[in-house]
Amino acid sequence: MSSVRATGAGYHVPFTEVVLLTIVAAKPIWDGLYWFSPAKWLYHFLLLFFGFVCLAGARINQDFLQPDRRQTTAATWGLAICIVYAAYMALLYAAHGRERGTTEILFKVLDPFLVFWLIYYLPKANLRYAAVAYACIVIFGNALLFPTNMGWADWGDARTFKGAYFFKTDLAFSVVTSLLMLMMIARDRVNPLIALALVVGGVEVLLSNARMNYLLFGIVVLLIVRESRLALRTLAPLGISFAILGALVYWQYSSSHVLGFDFSDPAAFTQGRTKTWEIDIQEGLMKFSPLEWLVGNGLNYDNEVVAHHAGLQERFDSHNETLHTLLTQGIAGFILYLGAWWGIYRCAIGWTTNSILRRRARVSIVILVLQSLTASISLSTVKTWPIILVLLLMMGESERERAEA
Image (cartoon, rainbow, N blue to C red; front, side):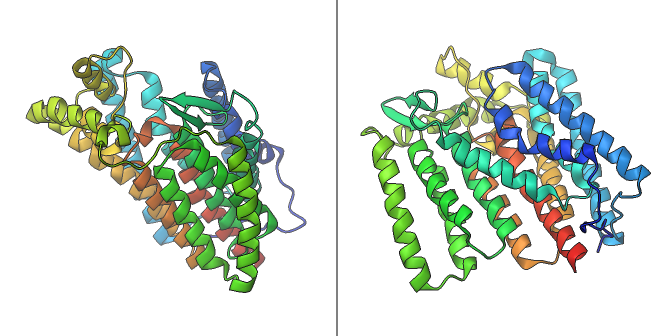
């Protein structure tokens, strides 16, 4: 396994590492400032600046992590694939210019890989503190917006809770992944913080009307119940008590207009996604030339084809990661994109032999794949960042285990 820095009581945590962890923890706050465009650029400038300062300091202080040969090979291949993918995306952007893509789209797609490799070689044993703060801000911070108009939005006839985010799906997915982070730190124990987070987070997901995340939340709950090893006599009264509390909160803030599960009208059930997918396939992919099948038609093409053929003033992306990637980057980009995710996953999973940590990392990937069925996840760092943080957190918890052994 990799050699790790000791994290005992005598270890002095560098100021720059404290700042970097604070910046990571504050990501949900900056996500809530979506309406102020310069905020995200300032955030990433601070993240990159202090990240590189920490890397330089780690080199000087010999705290730079030295993976073993197997991990070095995985990291070399993973980093190489990410670099090739970044170069490919830059070439696509240069070829089409701003007519078929923006710098913001380019940055959103590449951002999770940049963050992963920025933090990969840094000691991560203290990342748990940033992760707990991150999760609490997401779950409990957004819950403070229940009584306010700011936390709500109307989607047709449905009144949905979105918290401080722009989309209801962003809130729900952030809640689900935050619960996964808390459980990764707690291992197989359900403490009062996690119990309360389950109740509050569950209510937020229900009120968001983000129905795919009902499934994702259920997966995380089943994982928690399966691995918590709570006896039924303990689980039953605890579950009933918190279920009653959750039901009261839900009753207080729920609307009579919610998104149901009427499958008789697919377009209505998917909120227009089936129409979007049909246009993407019939008017986009089916009319591609061989070259366009290979390299796509520009980073913003899925928005263009739907707007043009649906006669819409407002542009909408594919709401499906596979369709979005094929339309904008082609088969070559799709393969490289999957390769980049596979590369960082292999690097992370090889860092530990702890079955619990590895299982939760796998669940995070399953959650990401399921969410990608109804969302273009690469266009939202709100959806890709939490998965990167889960993978890095798994590595950090493994480092902490070995340091304490």
